[in-house]
Amino acid sequence: MSRRKTNIMKQKLTTLALVVMIIFTGCVDLDDIYRRLDEQEREIATMKALINAINKKISVESYMELADKSGYELTMSDGSKITLKHGVNGEQGVQGPKGEQGEQGEPGQDGDAYLTITETDDTVIITYKGVVYAVLKSVPPNIINMTLTTTKSVGSTILLRIDAAEADRHHVWIDLNNNGTKDDDEGVTNFDSENAYTLGAQVVTVYGKVSHINCGDNQLTSLDLSNNAALKVLYCNSNQLTSLDLSKNIALMTLVCDHNQLASLDVSKNTALESLFCDNNYLTFLDLSQNTALANLFCDNNQLSILDLFKNTALEFLSCRSNQITLLGVTKNFRLVSLFCDNNQLTGLDVSNNPALKNLHCYGNQLMSLDLSRNDVLRELYCYDNKISGTNMTALVNSLPARNSQPPGLFRVFAEGSAIEQNIINTTQAATAESRNWPPRNSNGNPFTPAD
Image (cartoon, rainbow, N blue to C red):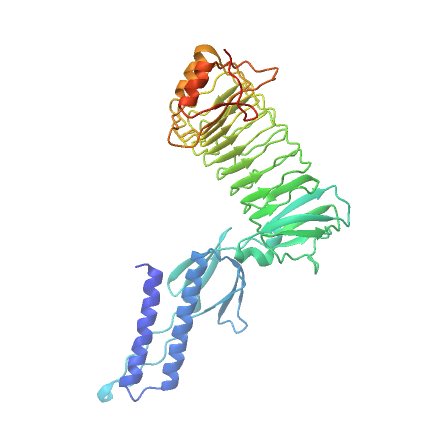
């Protein structure tokens, strides 16, 4: 049993002893007994409040000494208050039986020993009735902020979706006129829903410990997130951002920054990142070696030539379409379910270590062979506009997993009328694919006549 729980149990036993005194003793001062019972109940309630604050990560915003110097009042981040009282001196013992002198009551612990409060950079340390409680200390809310700069004109509206933990919401507000003061109409009242805000300036600051913000499609030219380490989800897509500093956002789990003008993106500090959507930018390099929790990656329509995913063993969905990728290593991505790597410059693709793979789009490359013998759950293969023919095409159709008791596999293997198509599938090879329930189709999903 923890010391805190033991202390509360002692308080309850003391309360029980006082009740027993009332029942079996007729000579006690009932007013004094009731007073002491009330004190015991207040102390137990205080201990429970401190434990609850620690367990629920409710932080101390401020504390001040009571007017009568009898203790302190804590103001918590959820708006509640906790009152802590100093100890009092013990009273004179009662007269002993048969005229003997009663024992002297133990002196009460003085205030400094009974209740002390000290601070570190991020913790308020409270010693109360011999037990130490380490409670988080709130950062002044105005220090936590994010600044957005837009080209939208003053008087127009921006759409924002903002969310925060329940305990932090009362601190969240938006400085729409950039005057550094919270005006009457600048509080956020609707969380986790999209709201329109009228601009009083082209620089807008969102104050408070925001965990989720969607500021997409607002003509943003800059976004400063360095003062909000609490951010977990960021949607800033479809803006005009040329840079994005995420080095302070170590809690970030979801990043959606597609359709901007980013030439580089550093996510090395965002080790909690699970989903990254950075498609339709100007990225030439993407280092994901620190993002071992990454499960979803969309980096289509950039200028990437190499994509190293050896450290991303949690990856399940990968879309890297329409880049300039010549080397793509997915041999360590055992959980990969969907791979869309079409319209690149791949000359080889090894999917032998992807047993969970269901969807493979690798059309528009320079592949000369493809082995699917270890992809037993594959159900969709788009591989047209490549260079697979002859014995390599025979090997491909023979490696297709049999789907005889399942719906037909989607097998788009030839692009009719394409200037870059070099795949050749003959009638025998097409029949083999049919026998495995993979009817060959053209790039539009229609039947076609195989080569003789």
